[in-house]
Length: 142
Image 1 (cartoon, rainbow, N blue to C red):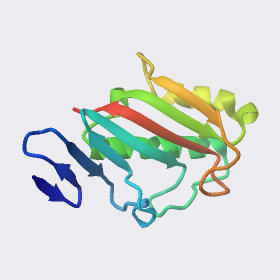
Image 2 (image 1 turned 135 degrees about the vertical axis):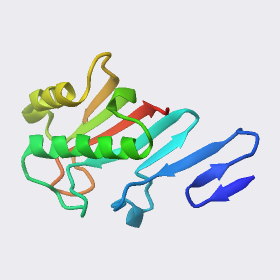
Image 3 (image 1 turned 135 degrees about the horizontal axis):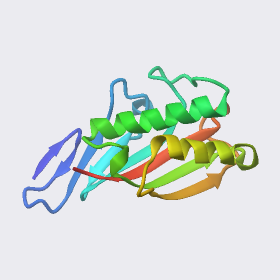
Image 4 (image 1 turned 180 degrees about the horizontal axis):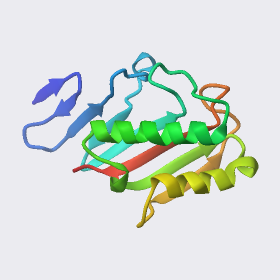
């Protein structure tokens, strides 16, 4: 068996988990992987509208949403994939009534046919009080 800080592998290929990270890894202080590649899948943790220093990019919903999707793209690229490989999206927003049309616009901007399965949820809050949207995805590993 081979073990490393980036994951666990067994020689028979029975179990392989690879941690995916970008530089800088703004999730490392929280003991969260930006993504994990396992069993032919990439599971990307929720990405918010934050820049590479972990600062919220704007108080504008669409600006945060575009940055969240750009962060998802960046993490997928680090895993050797793209948004075209996404099969499932989870979108969490703090105000569904105000932003449903914006979410639909973001889906059209970043995702293409065949559109991935999607879950859209309104939540009372996200990890930071100024975050309005968070996006997580599951993608096929190449």
